[in-house]
Image (cartoon, rainbow over all chains, first blue to last red; front, side, top):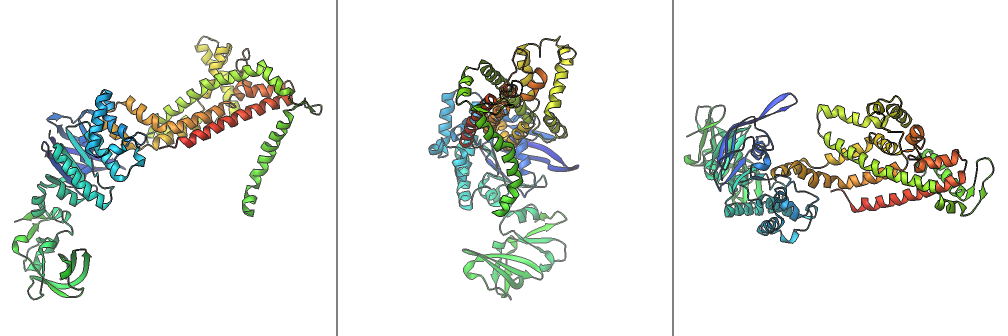
Length: 337
Length: 278
């Protein structure tokens, strides 16, 4: 069942000032697919999720879940499940009762609720901790309980609000894969919110980049990464971010900005480079290094094999092919081909 | 260490002079006959034997039990209800919270006299509007009236309940809303259970409070009547000591009440240890 959001608007009044959290956001999560909404803090991504869940009332627009207009429907009747950033587990209830809470709230008969609870627990490997309370669980287990609680009702759609942000790096990478596999296996329509561009690029069938309550770009992760619609998207996705340099450095006379991803820049001899300058810093990150080069007062980052990284102070040239160059024009840095 | 003792001295002096010494004296007097005029005469366990056969005392213990059974749930329910109603931060609750606390600040004597005027069977507005239904003139009326007027002085319990309610994470309520829980289901399964440890402590504290707090209204409003219906233990101790001048026997009763209170505090301590707030 799909989620459709049409021209959704929401603003908050904070100390007398009106702040637009969402400005006519329109998007669709197709049936059984996963869409990841990514953006910096304050971009409206959590507000979007909360509006779909019914925890915030939209000022305007329309929300459909499974073809049904739920814009004014109470959260419990929208048939969506949500995983909260802090998991929001019921601290006084056992894992079993946490998972079954929604079933009990809907007066499902005990035996049926029990078997569904155990099924969800099995799916997430929680059988051993069913009788424990959330306080006695590790962060990863709590996260899985929150997922099980969402899964057990077999909702039309899943809403996940930065579910990995409270996990350590190793667990985050592992859980990222698990969630994606689970989502594919169960084919449950999922809207996933994150500020982490790695999650956005690795997890979604579709990625939506949000800024200031507006959708900047929407598409397949690969496409959005390869052909960003504007300078913001270009910088926001990818780590380290895309180099943006004034066009005049390449001999142009316009006001446009050119962009090249750090991994698309090659370190060459100073005399052979299309751009050149001294190395001002080298960051070693295991197998790779990020080399900071000063190009006529602008900083360019190059990602290269750590073993071939030059020393600080060395004069280097930067090589790249025209097909890797992006051009951004105008005040909003729109991409032009 | 010396500074600690110096700083504690004023308090300790008061504690010794006003609490410890009188308490020690009472524990001795409890085994004497003492009218306050003649010197106390040691009578051994006579007072204890009298205690067992004192029907007026056991009636006052029964009256106190009735008071507790009515007052504690009432006060607790009122404190919890106010806490839930006023837990949000709005302009209305900012005004309403102090108002809910206000009756607690009124001095006990003034408070009792105010209620005496309100409930007065001859010209009191409440009694008049109820057609003088016997609120203070019949035993059942007085037994209900005194716990009811106590149910407005709930400021401290209200503040504690409010803090307990506000310490529950709001996201739990959002999760319950998405889970499709009705307001009653949310209240009974989440709010009440998460507040339960605090409410249990409040209940025990209120039981101890209720052993004493009825003294002023019982003395000023009903003078223990009608037909001894509001002669609670504290009032009975007071009457025994200062109306009948049996200070020795009054000390025996006070000592018994003290031991009873210690037992309740012990239970409270045990429960507090077992029920740590989540």
